[in-house]
Length: 113
Length: 116
Image 1 (cartoon, chains in turn purple, yellow):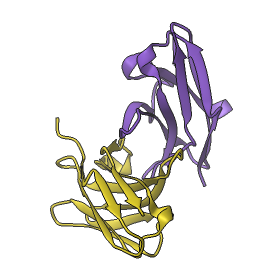
Image 2 (cartoon, chains in turn purple, yellow; image 1 turned 90 degrees about the vertical axis):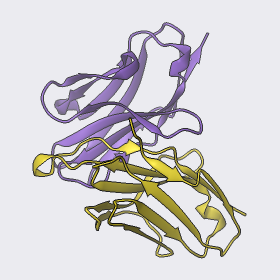
Image 3 (cartoon, chains in turn cyan, purple; image 1 turned 180 degrees about the horizontal axis):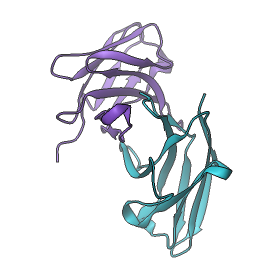
């Protein structure tokens, strides 16, 4: 069975600093990986996804993530945090041909002025 | 662009009552998913439908049922509501790609159910 682990339920960075949100997965077969962002009282918005091909994927709002099979990781990064990045971020995994996406517990990002 | 529409956005029910949540997927999407997100929790998969047939089932209580209709909209029916059912219920839709490849799920704004 697949699972997703996000390290750190809360991450706090200063505006302009690097954002690093960690995600590790376990899966018996190559998964598809996603990062979603959720603003307060909002739905889930897709930031980026990895399915096949290039392991470094770029998403919206300057975010990117790198799929590292050897480390079973899919960490999310952004070079310079902005106040508007403050939100909850969910890493998620879906198996090929799967009909459900399994979410990690989420990481709440705080951005300090 | 059209998004996933959920109705109602907010719903207040008393214990033991029933509730029906509706989801209208993005046009031409053939797969619908239902998730439950409790306060401070990650979304938990409940159930999904592909081409109007149940495709996968997660932690959906027996008190809940769902179906997808011929126009691809879906309804989640919840009976004998309990206080613990209070949560944000998300619907998502996607289009199954070639040979079962996965495309991303697009989420609606959610229905906030409060059971009192």
